[in-house]
Image (cartoon, rainbow, N blue to C red):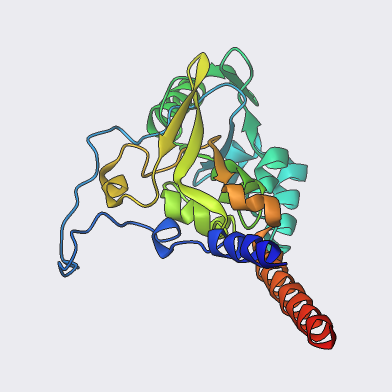
Length: 269
C-alpha cells in the first residue's frame, strides 16, 4: 500500500505543469523589470503575399457609368454576397463570389478572358487587371482586387481545430491563436510548426511562442494557406486540458479512500 501511495503521489507531481511552459514571450533576465516601451522592429522580410494557384481573389469594378461595370458583374454572385454578408458568413462567401486561380495561374474574367496573376502581389495583380480593362474600355473603370482574407488551418492542441478565416490584409501569429480559441495548457508552446506553401512546394518551420524574439521573426505574421500544428505534451496521455483536473481529483480521492480503508482494516487487526 505504501508503494501504491508513492506511485500516485509521483504521478500527481509529474502532472503539475510549470508556468514557464504555458507563458508567452519570455526570455527576460531574472530580477529585471520588463521594459514596456522596448521597440522591437519587424524582420526585414517582404510580407506581401504572393498569389498562388488555387487561391481565391475578390475583384470589384466601379465606374461613373453603371452600364460599363454591369458587363463584369455576376448578378447571382452579387445577390449572394449581400445575403451572406448579412448572415455573417465571413470569408467563405468568396468561394462562391470570387475568382479562383487555376493550376496555370489564370483567372477568367467576363469580356476580358483569362488573365495570369499567380506569382504577383495583390497590387501587381490589380494593376494587371486594370491594364486589361483599360484596353477594353476607353472610359475609366476602377478595379479593386483583394485576397479572400487570410485563410489558415489549425490542428493539434488548439481550442478549435479546423480552417479559420481572418478578414484582414495582415495578421500575426497571435491573431491566429486568438481566432483558433488559443492553445490549451497541454500544448508544447515552444514547438509550434508552420507548414507554409511556396511556389512549387512546401516548407515546415518551427517557432517558439515562449521566446519574445518571435516578434522580430519572419514568421511573426502568418500567410494565407498556412497550416499551424501544436504538439501535445506527454501528460496528454492522462486526458485533455478539460478533464485533467478532474483526473487528478479522482486520483486524490482514490488515494485518500484507499488509505482510509487500509487504516481501518489495520486498526481492527
